[in-house]
Length: 357
Image 1: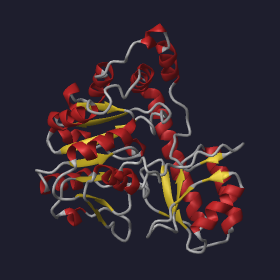
Image 2 (image 1 turned 180 degrees about the horizontal axis):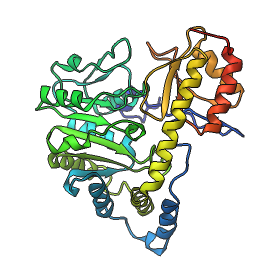
Image 3 (image 1 turned 135 degrees about the vertical axis):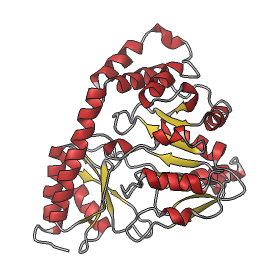
Image 4 (image 1 turned 180 degrees about the vertical axis):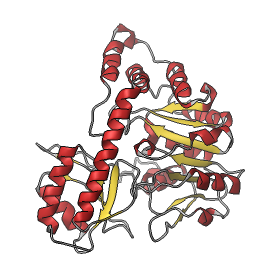
């Protein structure tokens, strides 16, 4: 703490991102990155954008990228907002759409940066407990609020809710914004984007980091009613008019265009997840139903933190949370089939292949 800090800085509890260890031969299953690289067309587009034109500022409105996103999702450009990854977009969402007299609602078990944003912007919030099986129960959100936000599927649980349940929530609170954070939806879920045609209080946020294999490029977008998009544009242009550089926009457009690569890698992750779930259950793990590129698991006879440390000794990193209710769970990113096989081999040594619930 320093005498030069503003008062608000002293009160902040910053978000701690997933570890990025630099270890040789590491099996990295802790931050939900895609195990497959981006489309070759993406790399070609980025190389093509490297020229003397980098002396110029990028398009502050990212019109070409917005047009590509709008065409892909059957909306118009006035319904699209783009930014430097979904995290930045969500920060704008909290400030621009969720700061009201009543508290914003979100699940008690979800992204830890939601309360971080609330602390940064002075937003009142209230967490709504997940059910005993870690599901979101819509009726629990039938209470006064300044807006509602949740991931679909939820993180770190991997559980999703149906579009019918989202519609129920939108109809329950027609004058409040409902934000659906769909970072992982492409791995088996059904996007709520089509509902934006019928509900002006719905905003859906996506990222290129997961299913498009572009976590290192930092591109995200939101789709919703023009009034919601205008609010985000106003916040963005009061903060940074150039959140996306020319290389990022070129790469993101190419990623949308290569649908074959997207489908091939997406389906590969889903297939690996299904196989990994079966292997984990055979070792006695309880695995929550997942439509994400990760699984959330616990073993009735083995401490999660000790298991994570033991895996690290095998050169494998997974995510362990010390939060209440989930301290005995591990979140395991879906890797390649080879990486999953290495994980199972290590877990077989750690928990014992004859262990049962």
